[in-house]
Image (tube, rainbow, N blue to C red; front, side, top):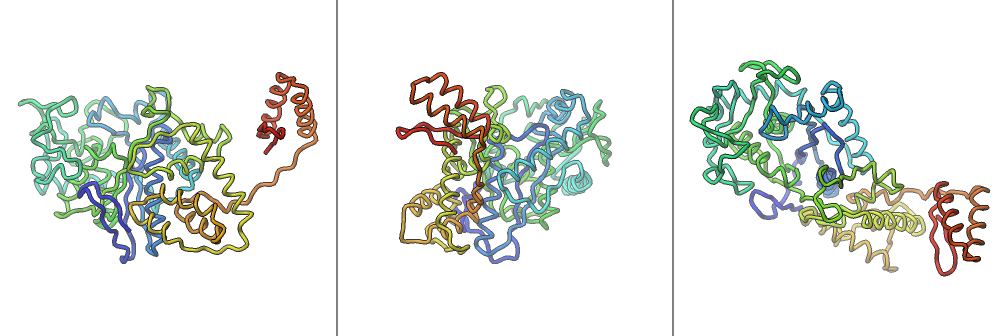
Length: 448
């Protein structure tokens, strides 16, 4: 099994002989619902874990829950948790628990298998403080004149190995302001522990006074402490490559004096209808929006699977609806094909999974198998679905027409024969409101 390693810029083989493959995935900051673009990253860690298991090994995945809100270096003015709490006029931890619960519902709807643990940042403060103290004692961190503890970027010689950003090329900017009177020694140093100042919410005591953790330290703390000091596969979105993962690597490696992560895996961005998904663009789509429209949420999973995880993809409502129809067709055919519950290993599918998680190639292979009458189709589909997670063996739900539906269908057929199109359209709406899907064909109307 090989995956593309962002740091080495090449495919690297996963050691599947060890008892467990230790995985860490950067989780959500729970100040709002995760949109479908966010969920693509969390699906990536699920797919990797499933392929590890397909190869006979056991994944052990930790996924953090960021409930202290720090997503930028501007920790005072850009704390997402506090901003949302103020907007909704509730306690920030109430915000965190609300959106954390929604996150787990989304994972379940996408058939993403639960991680071994979901540690919350707010419950791991002591863990972070312990690591920060070790960094200070090792002279990788220092106390600034503003009471904030900073990591000294210049002390870490290989900074930039993941992103290619070298310290001597990083220019001071709005996130890295520095002057001779500044609290930092170097403009690219970052906060490990921020002094509370006038802030009174979400603050904790520390050896350096009241404050709160910086953006990057929680992932170093949780990954090292909960995975016994080493991560085999670290997963995250491409937007986290810099500065988050670059800074996390510096912190973790400085603590253990070796590479803490074997392999860095990054999933690419998602566009929706050709544009980056964002609140300002007004094109944010939640999984619940898909479900409310009557579409199986696993149609979103199939859309993602049809694209390589390292390729930017453009999701559209048309592609989601097409995936929904494909799922319905495959489940119906599985019920028709299946005479047993056997699983047949398909070497092409296995090779695709093991070669940088090429799920798009797997989907193409299944479309070929669908038309091939020389193989046990259901058995091969079942093998692929161990990773794809599309629930293809789901029983078809039998629905019986009610008397009201029968009357309306007959009325609509008559209206169409008499070319009363307005009446036909109105009757279609009534039937759709009752849960039927109507299609008009040259042979007449059909329903499902």
